[in-house]
Length: 216
Image (cartoon, rainbow, N blue to C red; front, side, top):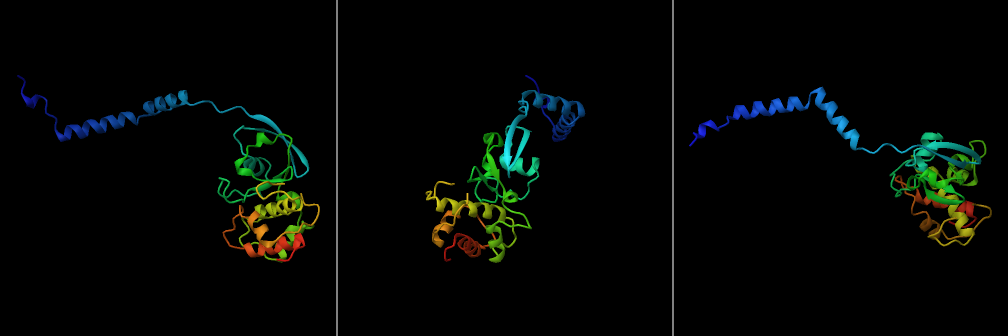
């Protein structure tokens, strides 16, 4: 029977052996082999696909990774940075734009889904020289503080008044061509998807009421 001492391993031996193994694994050759192995099992990036969008009245032809959101398309590819990336999960409303007259969270929508669609961002509503009525009302009523959520708030507010004018139910969304009449509470309810961390909700409601021609 073999002596147990033949099979005994010292603590020092275990440490030295582990260190040697770690050094071998971290060698350039091992790292290259590991990277090659990971690369071989990862799927290739999808090919770029063409898409044509009508943004703020201009036709824009793009070639995009099919995974690109409408928000990233506007900000990173068209450099329309007025539309903000907030939560990136459709919960804050900072990225709200209007597509064919309806408000959407652009972070939840892929650009390729909007082939041929007409998209209006905050840049398409007015200019510093000629503000949209809603933009002017926000200024008069101090409907912003830090301003980060303001582009989404204004786009949503414009769409909300159009929804009310057209009698669209609150869970459906629809272009401001006439002054609607609505209660302050209804406008607040319809705007509940747009979060203002500064808490300027009362001023936003006052701005909307002015444009709507209703009393706050």
